[in-house]
Image 1 (tube, rainbow, N blue to C red):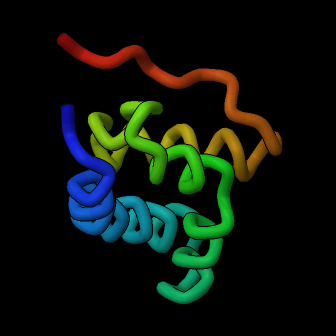
Image 2 (tube, one colour):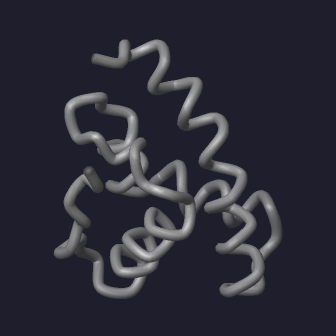
Image 3 (cartoon, helix red, strand yellow):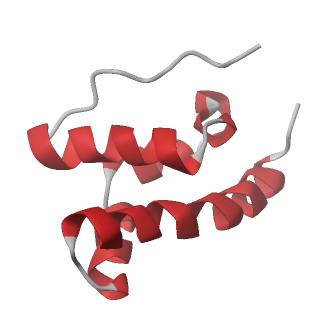
Length: 82
């Protein structure tokens, strides 16, 4: 099992990719994209080891975040890949 401290390390690697996708697709600057991510329900869930969201790629997490930003809900979290 990965420790909570290691989850934060993985998040630090994943978040720049999500922020870049937000900047590119939503045409916002780094600050706004960062706020969108860090203020999201997705990010709160990503910080919790038990959710296993840290297993997902930046692109998959971006898709989940886009759903949240568009609809206000997260309805589809992919299953962990074996």
